[in-house]
Image (cartoon, rainbow, N blue to C red; front, side, top):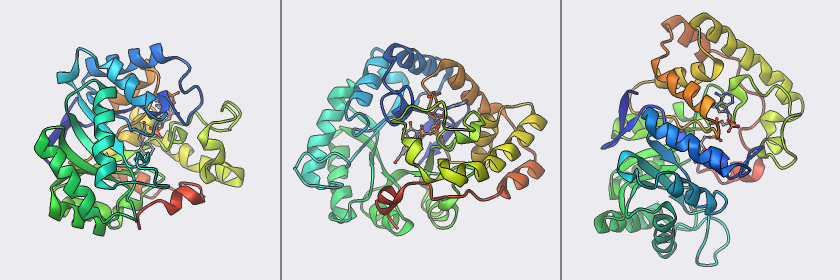
Length: 323
Ligand SMILES: NC(=O)c1ccc[n+]([C@@H]2O[C@H](COP(=O)([O-])OP(=O)(O)OC[C@H]3O[C@@H](n4cnc5c(N)ncnc54)[C@H](OP(=O)(O)O)[C@@H]3O)[C@@H](O)[C@H]2O)c1
């Protein structure tokens, strides 16, 4: 597995998001043993950049990851996020310094570690100036509880303000063949400042793999049943995107998931996607995308894919995204 840099943090180019092992998706939480085997296989394969958040579960996803890496802590880069659980009783996102100081100790305990390699604010908190939040994070760095800091779904202007207080290693945003939003402002700002981009949902929540052509196989509580891109006519329209990805995959001798990841890696250095899966076979498939090479012509065709129909999140979640 080749590596890349997020600020001053080196990571393998392909990581693993473990959210879906506990929350949001069909089958989440049903088989913790299989999830733990998948995480351990990831470490064996060099997929050592592992992502969770306090709010996934809440808490149980961090505990699961902590159990999985027990005894192998020094081999992995542990990333987690704070700010969507309030320990101060405040409604909504809470990135106040007092909340962060409580949150970090819980995450350290659940992950079974004395330091978090990359600690992200999950969503920008409109009620707390980013300078205060980053000031509190820099104190955690000084104390050795956190090694690098990150922001998630932050606008370019917020990233600049944060970086002026303490170096930001990475921004985590939704970025994939059907979500190109970061290209307009965030990615250019990150390049200028030497900050990495961690694309979340790089497989379009599974859609870009071609394995999700209807909602029939999804549990009633599966989060995608309420996502605009997966519902109504949008789902049917968006299938055209998957068909185009599959055409390229067939030419390359790869799978659609691998093409979706290889396209992200082809966007340049400092980009480290974190596809999520509970399954070892899919982990192996996704990590092999590191070796998939696309031609300039294929990249151009993928750049020009039919735009996605539907917002990437439902209305309340879109409202929480920093603009
Ligand atoms: N910062 C944020 O606000 C934010 C938001 C969302 C997610 N994230 C992070 O990003 C990570 C990844 O995002 P995500 O899980 O939402 O979406 P994703 O990685 O785009 O897709 C995950 C889905 O694809 C399926 N899948 C994975 N590999 C596959 C393959 N090779 N073939 C067929 N299906 C495959 C998975 O199912 P199985 O598990 O059944 O294989 C799962 O349903 C999360 O784990 C989380 O850490 C962050």
